Amino acid sequence: MIVNNASYQFKFFTVGLSLQLLIFALPSLAQSESVTSIASLPDQFVFQETFEPPGEPEPKSETVGAGSRDGLRCSENEQPIRPLMPKRNFGLTFQDHPPVFISLPKTSAQKVVLTFRDETGNYYERTFLPITASGGIVSFTQPKEKTPLTVGKNYEWSLVVVCGKTVQPDDPIFKGWVQRVAKTTKVDRELSQLTTIGQANWYAQRGYWYEMLMTIEKAKKAEPKNTQLK
Image 1 (spheres, rainbow, N blue to C red):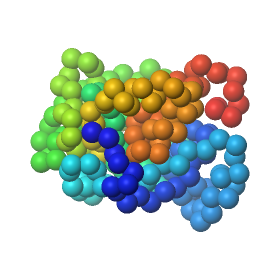
Image 2 (cartoon, rainbow, N blue to C red):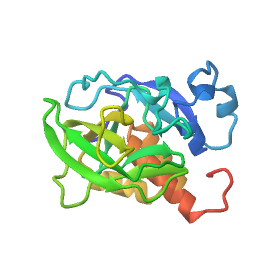
Image 3 (cartoon, one colour):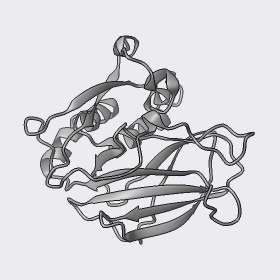
């Protein structure tokens, strides 16, 4: 199911190509009332921040987007962990097992717990995953053997950073919403005609947050010396 730009009302905001600018929890961006400096960049993403999910009502959640988080950490000596999500904490995906992205500074934590729940609040899948990298943008994905997300349904994910040997109530936890959309041959054809950055913009303009971040990470790996991507 494809989001029809003519059928939904969107509120647009501009996000620069720099991954740092994607972390909406950062005060410099969250508190900014002007996008002039961002818009002046030669490459930019216009991500549709608010929209009605196709076929389903907007998911309800008590959590708030990264734009208003203070960030959490395992100890006072560590920098805060930041989730990478739009302000309303919702995005579309074509993935049956979408990755969850966070900005993870160097940490003493060794694992996370990634959980998906359906809209009734019931567990869908829950997995312990090792932390294999820190000090930058990292992602966590459910293993392929786990139950894939159902097309057209909303799911709330939660990511707990386990600071000790077991999960504790005060461990950092981040949440967001995702809806899986069926991918069509028309979409594949459109994307095949675009560059990697063009694909990232395609995803951004249609609300596919998870694919946008995946594509930017792909571009970074393909062009490790590109300072703008970095």
